[in-house]
Length: 307
Image (cartoon, rainbow, N blue to C red; front, side):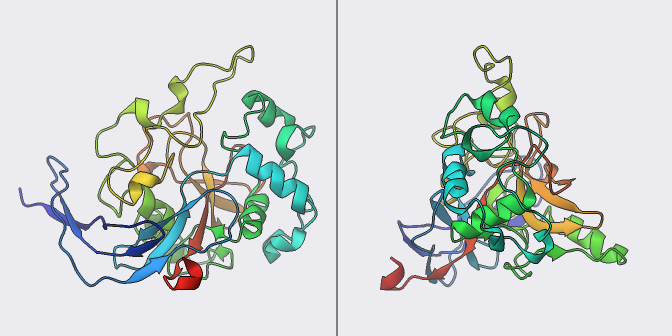
């Protein structure tokens, strides 16, 4: 059977990348990745001086670069954000003017790290584990504080909430389709530029990205989450092999909201154990208590000041 052509994987160097665009071929039968085809390079890097997770420079299929966090934000990082900016509501978008707290996204007693007690207690004070139970507005503010932004669509204004027109069914359907395409920064990084169904390939391997198999938290009876970094849940080709935990753990917010105050999350949960990159898109209210955060940023030219 003739293979279908999909964009693939660049060669990349530390800090500054000469983006070498390539082409991968995914056969409908064996889903194999074949040798790259080089095209015109360009020099880009990720912004310096940002907070939170280290960022990875990622190419879109057309070669346009952007940056995404190598992992989800952690309890320790969110705690620092709360301590330094707990009242900086100006970090939110105008759509969140109603929100006047970051420390809790629900009616819970405050717990460790500025998140509800019902969330922080289950992690037993592990600052390196991915934070959960933060609202859409808090996630936006966290990324703003970090010098970053929420991930979204490449043809939208990254500094604004992408509010989908409630009266235009065609637009709503188009956006829902594009959430499962490489126009979506999150999906593009998860699927290695559209070349694999899962972050690590095309065959489901629960032990790589499924947190539900992990032992329960000692004494708590609640399933734990893998550490945010240094695990097997990552891509297979540079630079995607430096992006961790895109599926199987805690869903993270995108900068897109639909009518009825329903905002987009991607990343899957422990309850979606077989979810591929295109099977993790969900809508949730802005105060949903099962969400975490992963930030994106615009790439900057690889000039000496940014290296």
